Length: 258
Image 1 (tube, rainbow, N blue to C red):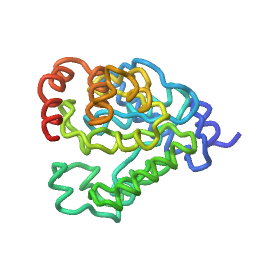
Image 2: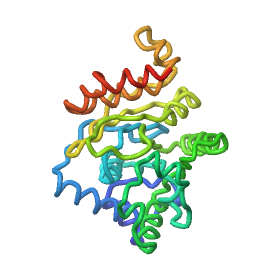
Image 3: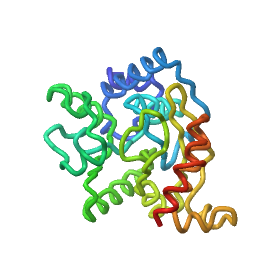
Image 4: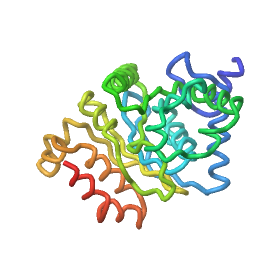
């Protein structure tokens, strides 16, 4: 048994492919332990141990990637999460329009020294994070769809944030349609909503797009605005007042955009 195999055994994860690196898993394990030490994070619910599935979550802070790792690791799996292109390749730069839209966050993930960003990229690529371009072009949307389909086709646990950028308050604001797009194009793949807050990660019941459109209570909404339905399911996993903020305020704002 080599060192990499030992890391997989000690962390109880099945890499599911040869592209996963032991050093990345070790770093994520340490990051998740640090998250617990700082926030005493609790976890609720488990994912299936095999098979393709789409994990959809809100995005609160950088610690979400540690929580996301732990959500997968507790079921013996590696999470293949979509991550913006600049995190996976420090040579890339996003446009001024994208940076303005996403809040120009000034932290090590965005404006740190290149050697730090290069190491972050190596760690994320070592768990086979999936590149996403946030420019909004049709070509980028098609690439997003194909990358998601490829990951799910390989049987991976694939994750996407419902929001384009972090919202420190934990509120679900300005959800993007990418997760709904993946769900509709993979209608029989199980979807698991996950709610991240400062000190908790909670997994909701799984469902598929086809199940939702056939459900008399959800069918109309699933057809017209599946993003809102996904946000409903995530919000159900969040504590108040975050949950109430979605149902009492943000939800109607999204529906009014139609």
